[in-house]
Image (cartoon, rainbow, N blue to C red):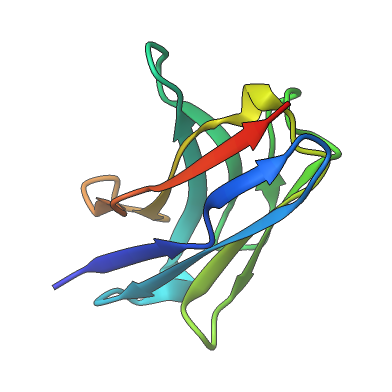
Amino acid sequence: QVQLVESGGGLVQSGGSLRLSCAASGIIFSLYSMAWYRQAPGKQRELVALMASDGTTNYPDSVKGRFTISRDNRKNTVYLQMNSLEPADTAVYSCNARHYRFDAYNYWGQGTQVTVSS
């Protein structure tokens, strides 16, 4: 059974930082691209950060320079360090795991709320 469990969300003031974690089980972690997505109320889900199985990363312009994704293949965990947070970053953040070769192996965590107050 595959599980992705996020933690680290919460309430933070504008300009503050948070670090999200996503612990994976039931998959061969090193074979998966890991990503963070977010969805704010009334908006579509959007990619926040991605780290492929080979370590390459991808960020949208909205978070580039503020957010950093990392992974620890020994701990089967992916992290999202978020700095200089803004109220616009308020959303539910979800972890995603997608097999590097087979798209059908695509899994989601339950999400964790991040709220940034002004």
